[in-house]
Length: 460
Ligand SMILES: CC(C)[C@H](C(=O)O)[C@@H](O)C(=O)O
Ligand code: SF4
Image (cartoon, rainbow, N blue to C red; front, side):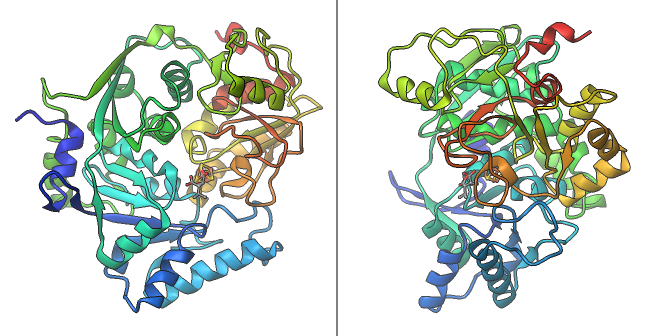
C-alpha cells in the first residue's frame, strides 16, 4: 500500500491497535514546561505511579520567565512558584531540566531542535500547542492536554485516534521580501483557521524543499493556527545537515544508519490524502494581520476585506480598524521580534541585515528576544547585538516574552504591536493590547519607520 510520510512515522510507533478504535502510540520524546506539567505531576503522585521513562523527558522554563536579570529571583510570586515547582518535580523524578541561566535554556520549541533532541521519524509531544514546530524534521509532533501529559509520564504512550491527512503544495518562486512566515500567514488567510481541524498537514513542493530548517519550523509552528493537530515536512539533505553534529544527535555509524532510514520518510507517489491544496508561490506577498485570529491577514498594501460576519465586527472594533481600510500609515509604537515562531538565528540575521546602519523611529519600543541561550550566544558571536543596540532596539534574555502575557513583557492597552509571534487573540500580549502578526523583516522595516509601510518597494 502507498503510504504518506505521516503514515510511515505513525505506523512505526503503533504498539497496539483496537480494530476501528484508537491506537496506542509510543512517544519518543516528551518535552515539558512550567505551565502544563504541575497538574500532571500531581496526578501521578496522588495515584502513586512513578514516571516510567524519565530519560525520554526534557524540561525547560520559558513562559513565566522574565527577560531581564534572569540571575535574580523572579519578582512575580505566581511565576516564581511555577518555576520552583517544575524544578522540584524534575529533581524528584530524575528529569533533565534546563532552568534559567542554564546554557541550554530557552523556549521549548527552539531548544529541542537546536540540541538535536528533535530528529526525523520521531513522535514528540509536549503540553503545548506549538509542538507542531518539530514537524519540520519529518516527525509527528503535537500538543497534548494535561491529562495526556500524565498518560505519557506513566506509560510513555498515548491512546489516539489516527487523524485525517491533508497536504498543501506550494510551488513556484517566492517574491523578494517574502519570508516563510508570510507563506504560512498567507496559507491560513486563504484556507481559514478551521481548515486543518482533525488533520495532520504535510507541506510539500519546491518552496518548502528550498527552505532552511528555521523557515520550515516557522511554517510547521503555525499549523495549529489553521486548526491542524500538526504539520510536517519530509526530511532531506537540509534536515540531515542541520541535525548532524548537534549535542544529542546520533553520531558516526549510528548517524549513517539513521540517515539511511530517514531517507525513506517521504510520501510515496500516489499515496492518498483526505484533502489537498495547491498554492502558487507567486501569489504570496509580505503579510500582516488586521484582526484577532491569525487567519485575518492581508498583503501589506491591501485593504481590509468587507466581510459581513459579526465576529469580524468585534475583531475590528477591538483592533480599532475598519472594513475597507488600508493599514499603511498606521502608527506603531511596539515591535516584538521573538517567540517560538521567529526567534532563531536566521530570523535575527534577517533583521540585523535590514536595520544595519539604520535607527528605529523615536516613537517605537523594539524588543528583540532570542529563543534560547544558544541563539543569544550565536547572536553575540556574530556581532548582531551591536547592530540591534546601535539601532536602538532592546535585546532581552531568552523566553516566550511578549508572545503571551504570562511574564513582565506586556503591551499596553490599545497600543499596536507588530509581532513575529503566532497568535493575535484579544489580550494575548496584555489586556487590550492590539497584535499585528508579521514576519521579522516586516517587523524590522516598521520599527525603522514607526508606521506600517510597504517596504517591498525599497528592496533591491
Ligand atoms: C501555555 C501553553 C499551554 C500555550 C499553548 O499550548 O500553546 C502557550 O504556549 C501558547 O502559545 O498559547
Ligand atoms: S513563544 Fe508563544 S507560542 Fe511559543 S510556546 Fe511560548 S507562549 Fe507559546
